[in-house]
Length: 234
Ligand code: GLN
Image 1: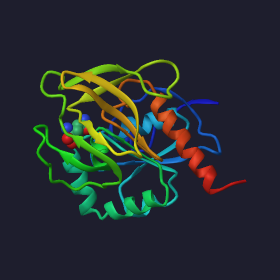
Image 2: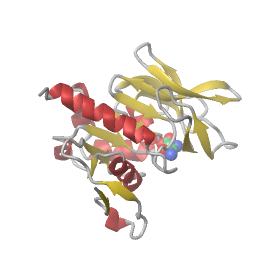
Image 3: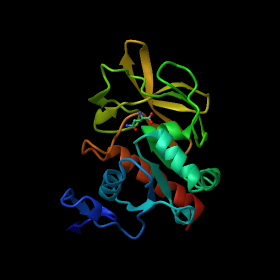
């Protein structure tokens, strides 16, 4: 069945959603979007389009029952400090330790990383979840490609390259042996990692929620659905 419906929190941005989307089925995974700062509504909309039940998450208690969590792009220092202030870092780490799938996009990819560098390569002291074996370099693309839409080929994603937005994006400077590299882009400094996966953790240097292609959200929703089925075999 198709309906036109507003997503939770939509009243904060009147008139911005008209997209038709599918009614989530009874097996639709429940996916939270960390709603402290950044592109929350856009992710809620894309997750709904990808067949999930999508809810904003602001408090640790709201992590219970989630099948997946998206950490949106925005400003990683702000999101990290607010998550720390609201006592969310340890509860999120604990859920990740229990196998919660998480998709970190742009600032979200920075929060997942073990360590962050500033654009000049010096360490950036900021609160991180530190759950992925990655080192990220913030604002890595420099002024020239400060912000751009690019087509990026992602390993395992059917239908060709995905159009995404890089907005003062990081890249993944290095990744440990348990991290699968799913996409790189060519830069003057060589090929740089922009999508990586470590088990149920997925990180993209770019914003996949702004350009209307829901395939990466669908990939994540499938990951969340499978991980729920693993927990509740029937
Ligand atoms: N430059 C931001 C940071 O370092 C990330 C940008 C984004 O999420 N679009 O936190």
